[in-house]
Length: 478
Ligand code: HEM
Image (cartoon, rainbow, N blue to C red; front, top):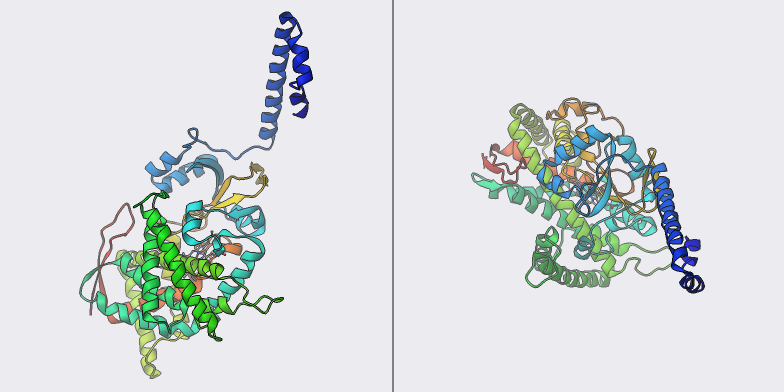
């Protein structure tokens, strides 16, 4: 390449200008030929390390329109049938490689995870906060991960059962004998559980109200068009983010001034000490960004899964009956023991209910895929994934594979009587970025289902929106 450029150096240019025009034409032709040859060699080189099969669609828009106009399930499954478990496409302005084999997903998320970094649009980073765990890799990620994971291990949350139960018992009477928008109500419930997990349960009510209010304003703009213009939901979300930060900073200062730092994840993050420094390990903004991301990751997901649980219980009366029997048996045990509430051990006895949750997580696959980005050119399954390309492990396709889950469209909790084959079941992801809140999510679903099935009878009328039970009405009566 440097040789080619030297042809145009000033000395050559002067020399060429002095040549008679007759000599100029063959020289120009030779130059063009040389450039074409170089391009051909370059093209041949790319082909040698060939890209995965698939179509990149139209220039720039790629296959984005197809993804939005086709049913997303068919979009992925049609291409998988045509090209196999690894195929390329171009969506939302990015060249992407989709993968739907458990082995390939494991390589991306676990064994070669250092070659594939998490990736999100910059607008999401602005709203959540750039220092949040989900945007990082390496030492900083590891440090945060240890702290967050420790707060949500079974040993850390087993004492939360009665606190979660209190929240359930506060919500349930408000649903009695009326029709509710299930997703909205589940969001309210999961949000309150997230708040006590993050801030502990002895909180100043006014302070929590303020945080909740700004958080909800922020959330409204999260999925909006990232247009930073006056009046847009995105601009409002950015403003709410600043005010939320102020509220969190005040709370952090108050807790730092108090030797004990308080409970919940916030207490754990404040108590984190660097081995070398005896001072605070995480800055205020690192703490607020991670508090916000945990609230964000914790409540929408759990609320969606619970909504799907209701839908599947509605569609499968026999399963609902068995779940109710299991929960009534646990209730009888509680009365026999003279206890007045659930314990962690009770929740471990809810085996069928747990399988219902597992099967819901598989069938609904509420997070159908995740995004990573190749940090360098990567040789992958005989193909080249160029640096900067996105790579998407398709959890949903794996969960709906006939090979791993026979009759995949059937809701059948009994399939989880046997553990699934390794790397075929990833509702909480896999590897370094897998979900640290999976046990809390399952716990809050079990506690809610216990009280719902033992105290009430459900009558569900579904109004589906493009196959999603966004407006499920739940009529609860004693
Ligand atoms: C049923 C409910 C939930 C589902 C289905 C779910 C699913 C997931 C998945 C698939 C990932 C991995 C994303 C990736 O690899 O890119 C993840 C990450 C994460 N989840 Fe959950 N999650 C749920 C509930 C929760 C809860 C209750 C918490 C709160 C503690 C939580 C906190 C997080 C965090 C902080 C991460 C990022 C971890 C990291 O980047 O290292 N999630 N979740």
